[in-house]
Image 1 (cartoon, rainbow, N blue to C red):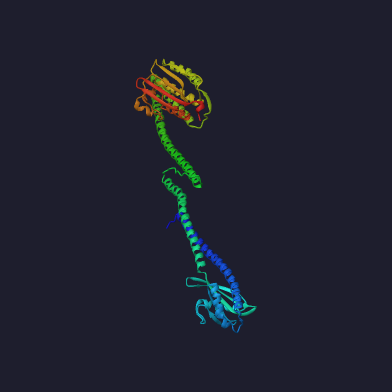
Image 2 (image 1 turned 60 degrees about the horizontal axis):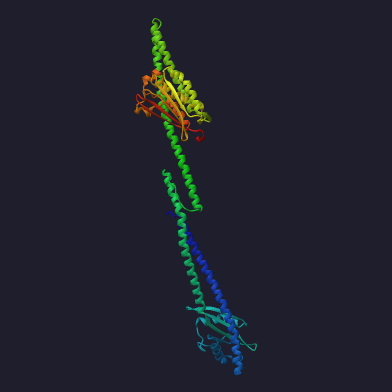
Length: 490
């Protein structure tokens, strides 16, 4: 059977109370009895002096000559005289301890508890000593006093008397009962308060235990306990630990998902790279065989095969260069350059105008001055060149490419807009996949490998930016790139 801390605490408190109650009751009974003994002893010895005084006066007033021989004759009158004064039972004995008279039974010796107690004490009393004993007769408490009777320095016998002290013991008993009742009430109140206190302490611990089980099942939930004691501190530490665990698990899950995506991406990239490299190699191999078979005799075939081999070799070279560029982007490079984006874009647009002029394409710039970002200048340069190169490749002849740069909130916004064939809407979400080409025939003719935008996207991500591409068929494409300004880069 499982006992909670609360029940252990309450059972322990109950055991402590029972032991304490019994020990305290025993101690109080002892103290009360000792105190009653002191009161009784003081009163009895005072009465002994009073008895001697009464008897002395009685003998003098009546001019009695009392000695050991006539003690038996005077015992009755003396006992009755003393009994009337002390209002208690009196017994007389001679010097030998023989019974003479009892105020309750006369000359007949009784066999009650009083007489038995007197006879036990009388031997000591004959030795000129006084002593007393407290006896319980039914529900009554009586004190029995026995002492030697001396008059004029002569031992006449032994006198004993008893006095009822039931009222004193009852009063002490009532006082003890009230104290015990008070102790029980205090314990009950303490016990109830302890239950409330134990519940207030145990309740958050139980909640922590339940939350721990929930965490084991993968359910994370903060616990709220409005206390400023150690339990509250434990709760805060528990919630902090829970958040840390939650964050670590989230990181692990993200890492796992990233690894899965990376593995999928690698497989996809490898399959496509293999396919894309196999195509030009097949073409080169076929034209090389044709050159070996017929090129020596036919100049036209020789020229055609060598031209096609050169073209496919260049395409393979460009593909390898782009793969290496993408590898550089994904490798660990420094991103702590202060880049004047306005000057960089203006310089690149001037450089690309020569290539654009071959297709009778004009590049217009609208650049805000002195816009700075933080990053890798080589990567930003490669990003702008790739986007401009795509606009030149796939733009219409005698068209215009517009390049703008502005500050938009906390970002530098680069917009490159061309006029050309455009991209179908259903294919916009695939253009950042490696080796994906909207028009494979057209891009092969223009030397595209489907890696340019992949490189651009990786560079933008590395600089904590965003890229959006809007396109309409037969209208053109607009590329919007946002990169945090220098002061806002963390």
